[in-house]
Length: 391
Image 1 (cartoon, one colour):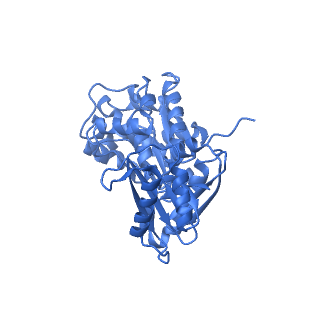
Image 2 (spheres, one colour; image 1 turned 60 degrees about the vertical axis):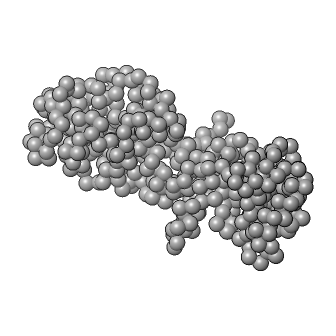
Image 3 (tube, rainbow, N blue to C red; image 1 turned 120 degrees about the horizontal axis):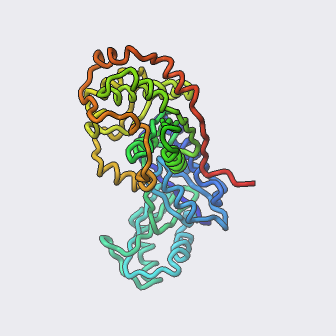
């Protein structure tokens, strides 16, 4: 029988909470592989085992498991009873059609009552494979590695370890509200927060009808992509143009961008309260633009009571772009659009503001009313992965 053997690493260090983490990982694997022919998931001695139907879509399973946070690596394996003749049969079956000049056996015996040690299994199967194929044993740079795992009730034989993304299963770390601009940075920040086990609700600020809907269309595509990693998402689309006009009427030009950011944080905080989220997250990187100097970040933080997580704070633009390419958001993020931050933006924004200074500048604004307006007028969209089948 062919199964998928999933290994985890960081979860194994969680001691008393390990069961919770593994349970969440199993639930996420079940959700991620929906519709691909997986018909059973179970825990097995430091592993998670996915049973495949005969008609399972292995390519689909492989692509989806490779994006499940908490997975260290996984493999398509042949499951047999833990007996030498059955291990030989599995090796013969798995090697059929493969061409290789050198190999090694890497056996791991989790079942200590098994009559052979791991080294003896290596030697026995090594002799079997060499006789069967004529290939030579090479322990340093083999063309093929045959992996064997021996457990009390079953054993697995496989020929490739496929890396997973690592991290923690989404859902074990609470909920975060991520401010999603549609640019390169914020989707990467949301991804990194998910990788640490947090479920993410998204908030996007747009300036339609003052600007076109391109930023909303981009964010729709970005959230759909990011939902592959957490399986269900909610997006709040906040109209921000009228709020910006009020800021323009009451705030000197150099301070407007920082005031925009403080208002966005306040609106996102209200969304967080509705969603039961414990923190906000942004794609800000220290010193990347004027609003992201250390002084201005302190001023933005002072506007809200929730912590603001900034997973990209020490990354440069090239590092962030590389991460965006890796997770599949880069091409969407670079589509030209009219972001709300380009509307009513001064030529020379303040670089080093203080909380006292900004509070004086903010005084003419009815901040609670502006925040309430943003929250009340927000449109909400729901996303799911795998998407529901039509009909």
